[in-house]
Image (cartoon, rainbow, N blue to C red; front, side):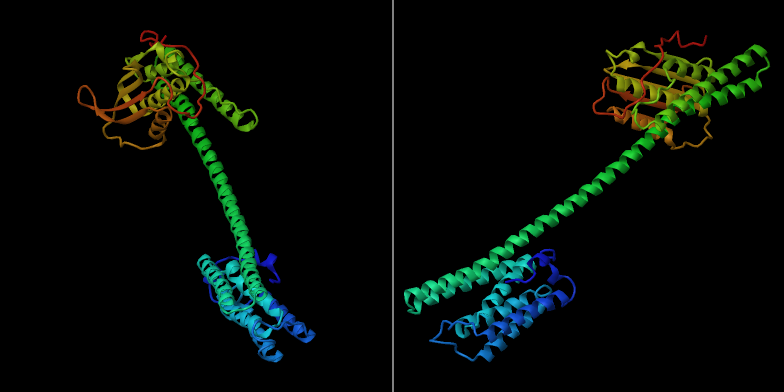
Length: 427
């Protein structure tokens, strides 16, 4: 029987197919143990008469030589499991039939067990089929040979046990080892998947923070820069003070929003979202500051939760903020903003003039527009268009469903009041 079944259970079944044959110290130790067993049992005189004639058909020294050759083949029991099957198996069988040394049974057990345990699956199946066929042939030979009934029963019992026990044991250990290896691989894949999901979550949160900073803070700072530049060019004191007041108000709003975001990032336990000072009236005011004659039409229904879902409201406001920020920073008059519900969808369109010499960029703003629209099941497009008088212009257009079609990223809630076309004018 195997001397180190538990240790061998961790060996790979495909060892024979990987690299050159290699004899390890464990294999040499196993072969040495079997050799000592052969010599010890031979010296003790314990033996049987075999199955041919009334006694052994050759001398004890010949039996020991045969079995020691079988032991030597065990040196390749894991690197080349077919070697013990081809060498030790026939030699041990011959000794059982004609010699009678008891140690031959142990070597035959090992010769049948090794290919199933350590060989590739194809080798294991082939050796199993050959072993079963050999056992059946031995039973048939005993029946056709005219042996007495007790002798036939003994042959059948020994052939059945010597074939079934090592084969069943080897397949059982092999299946347990393969199941363990599969479980370890699955655990490794699950660990890699968990790490990948965590990395994706961090990346999504990073993009969300970047979009928030771009949508809200950048809009306020654009207004600050615009009003500061305007104040420097105004000669009327009242107009200059009004422009500076608007600049100061935008700077304070940017500071509040930035503090709110920093507070959320610093507090890991709350899980709350930053509250942004962003609403449709403030967007209209930014456009008016850039173009006093801007056409602005914002439907009150956009902030009606009975008609537009909260996620779509937030996405529409963020898309509008990005469009307004780009129009203030890069556009020029005339500017036209329309936002409302038409044909069963939320539609936002902002058209402004632009300098034809200015190159068209592909920065974060355009990507954020598409991302926010897609998150609620809508679409957004941006691109150059000719103005009414044929001069270069820029258009931002978004079409959103009345309610989100999936689970979009959470957005800060809408704040402020609703607007009509008249209320959008500066006060």
